[in-house]
Length: 239
Ligand code: ZN
Image (cartoon, rainbow, N blue to C red; front, top):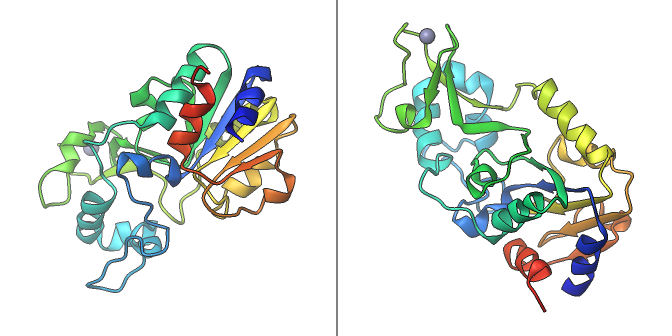
């Protein structure tokens, strides 16, 4: 099956990769949405509640407690999925990555054109004066991080109830619309806006690499149900 993915990659000039949490699980980042994923045991709150705008505003200290323990992964390293995608961009095969992840691992691996639909944990800014802060400034400590102006510092990640960036969405849609091959990996495409964005693809090959079925399986050229880091590495290895 991977020889088929190899053939598709060889024949493609404008690959776009659309990825979700499954891309980073091999790096040790758990998928908080998956079954048995993160839940606040103590308060019986769902991650969707704790990662909402309302919760951030009303329970900022609790938000940071949850965020620091469960979503900030500063010491993780890219895996083969990130590395192979960076190599494909480097050799001119891949035009863009669209990701739902906030971990910044594609950029760490060397990718340049990355549309981060949900923002990045690496960027943070003051809610009052917009001064940017490094992630290290907010990762440590137990208190709510404050700007020197007194304002609360917020991660530049898209919380539930918050809109996506128009600029990021239009960049992602344009990349997908002009791709000849769309590889979707590590996402079930169940979460907004992932499913809707795939509809802009009009190219030749839709490849789905996911452990479980997705809503686009019937439209796919190729479906692979194996770990994405292994699949991508094998698809570009010699022999
Ligand atoms: Zn400020």
